[in-house]
Image 1 (spheres, rainbow, N blue to C red):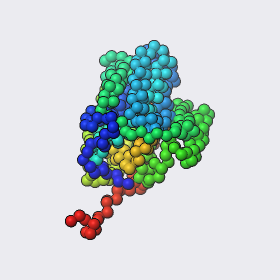
Image 2 (image 1 turned 90 degrees about the vertical axis):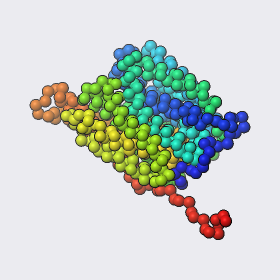
Image 3 (image 1 turned 90 degrees about the horizontal axis):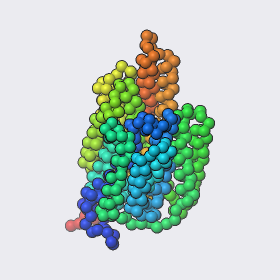
Image 4 (image 1 turned 180 degrees about the vertical axis):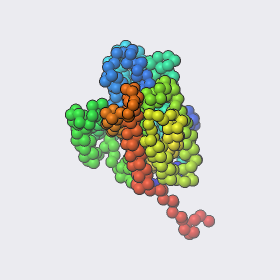
Length: 498
């Protein structure tokens, strides 16, 4: 499989009947990116507003976590179904339906006057995102080709990576200057703009009529929801919690049944042939491991910046800007580097830098400052992740049959969500254990406040050790599993045109 951009000069395939013959690729890309940015920002922008939401709506500390979890459960659980629905019903149609649902839920959530109303709105946001998000990569893949596709994927990867950090900045700014409600209302004008512009500028790919794989949809959705829920429950109550273990065991049974069903289904919701190619399977595995590292870094560094360095929410968000800018710059440069060096060398370099940044963070302690202990690892991580995601997207989408583009995109994003939840749950358990041990053996001569800060920092340092293991595993996959693209065979002299 080729992992470099396909050759060609056109910006989009020929328009089907009834579609504009001269679409504006810039506006089409802007609409697709607006959706991706909205979904990505929602993963972090709400975090900064959680304390204000708790005070306004009377959440308990445990209930507060469900503002994040309600979204994650619905989003992660329904992504595979959303991807396949786009293939069968039409990707643009399902994309727009998901955006409409997400926009309405954001409006309702912004006006929420009770905890239950906000949680219901967040769950519906997750449903909308699950049907809209797979369409972003699938529509990008079918609306662009050749060098234009490589450039579009570069911008897409930059927005996806940097958007997570920018969400922290935007969340802090909106919460500090207006209200927690603004972090939900901000989605409304973006969603309306997408709904107006998408039918005019995004070409409707060819539909691939078929039947829904209902058993596959049910087992995959239930299995993913239980897996995500089990990870979240284990992070909060420990890996010995009976409910968490029951959810994870049930998830294993359902996902095993899902695989068995997919091997026999005539029109599977996730064609297992997507995993038959070595490079694509390796790239999918890294799409599980890298988000596990990235989301854990955001979560634990946010705690360190606010609870150890005593930064305000807005200041803590701004502290991530160097990483976000490095991610964006490197993701924009990657399309230029790919034709010259190929996907594997860039992916390996990115993996080395990500691992180096995380390993540097393992040395963090409660006497560390931002410039000496955090800024350098952030820059390395930003450069490494900026180099990594576009090659992975390109490897996964290269040579995917048109009928499977939505399923391939849905699986990619489902693995990202599961990787983030699973990684955070594992590392939260590691962090809690390290914090408890440090609290039981405080440094000599410290007061209670200093001991608490020391325990928190030790927990964060323990979590970064686990994150380093994820990063090193991702690097090993890039080195050992993913193979460089084979060059096209030279034609003999007799075959060359005279």
